[in-house]
Length: 270
Image (cartoon, rainbow, N blue to C red; front, side, top):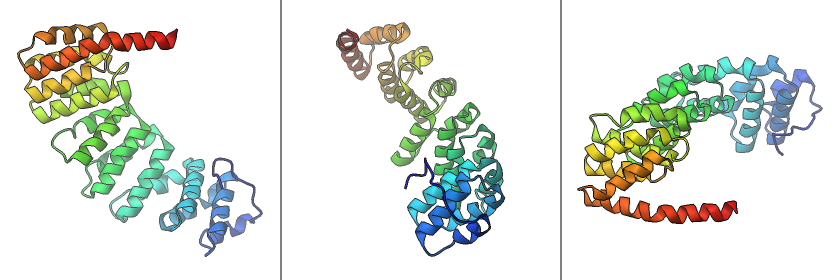
C-alpha cells in the first residue's frame, strides 16, 4: 500500500494508539495511515514512540510518513530522540525522519551530531543535512574534509555536493588549506558538483593547479574538466605547458575532448 495516497480507515480515533502496537502488521499500518491522513495530532508522541520500536520496514515507512505529516506536533519528540540518551538505532531513525522534514529550523539541532562518537549517528546526521540543504550547514561539513577512509570520504563528498552552488564558497576556502588532503578533497567535491554550479570555483582551481603538489593539481584539473566557462577553458589551455607531466596529460586530453563534447551537444540541440 502506498503511503503517498492514504486510504480512509474505519478505526475509531480513541482506538488508534492501541492499534499502533497490535500484533497484526496490517492493523498497525492502517492505524498509522489513519493518524496521518486524519491529522490526529493528539497522538503525535505515541506515534513517534511507536516508530522507534516498529519491527516491520513497510509499517515504519508508513509511520514515518504520518510523523512528517504531523511535523508541527511531532518535531519536538523526534529531535529529542536524537540525543545521546537514546539508542544509536533510535537516533539514526530520528535523523532519517528529520531529513524527511527538510526543515531549515532543524539544522541547529542536527549539527552537534555530525561528529558524534557513534559513526552511524554521525554519518546519518551529515546525510540529513545534505537533504535539508540549509546553506548554514555547509561550513560545518566542509570543516570535516581531510584524512578519512574511502567510504566515509565518499559519503562526505555526496553530503557536501548535495548543496550545489551553496557549497562552492566554502570549498574554495578549503582549496587554500595548509592540509594537502583537505585541498584535494575540496577539488574532488567541486569536480562532483561540476557545471554549472561550480563555475565560480574555476579561478581558485586554476590557482591550485599552479601552486599545489601533484595530487592536488591533478584533482583540480579534473574538476576544471567538468566546467564549461571561459576561465576554466583558459586554465586548461595554459596547463598544456605545465611542468607536471600528469597535469599536462590531463590538459591535453581535456582540450582534445572539448570539441567532441560541443559537437555532441550541437547535434542534440539540432
